[in-house]
Length: 142
Image 1: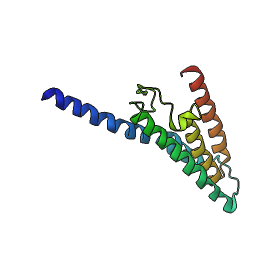
Image 2 (image 1 turned 135 degrees about the vertical axis):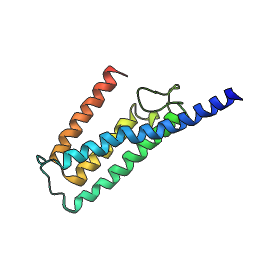
Image 3 (image 1 turned 90 degrees about the vertical axis):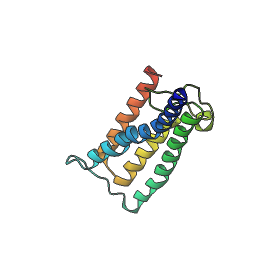
Image 4 (image 1 turned 30 degrees about the vertical axis):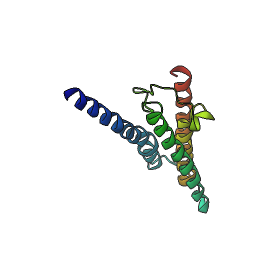
């Protein structure tokens, strides 16, 4: 009985880990830090006019890609997208069938949406730094 409760608790914790980590990590990288950049006093803006609505397809495609990857990491890989708890099984289906790091592509698409929506020059610089860091992470860690 005690062992069965432990297994159920472990299963529940694993199920909660992916959504919590998915909210915390990208929440900081894609919401909090860009918000700080856009609201800083040093930020210049490009007037996008009605064109800022072009951000919506970037947000949708990036968000769908990222969520699909999280689902595949959890369901098929038995892990999370966070490096401290990587998938136990290699995921080669869905977006991973076509691109090596679709999670990062989704993150960058969402950030491009933020850039298009806000017209923030500083956010362009932030996006370049983030893309560079993601590349270094892939090259030196993965």
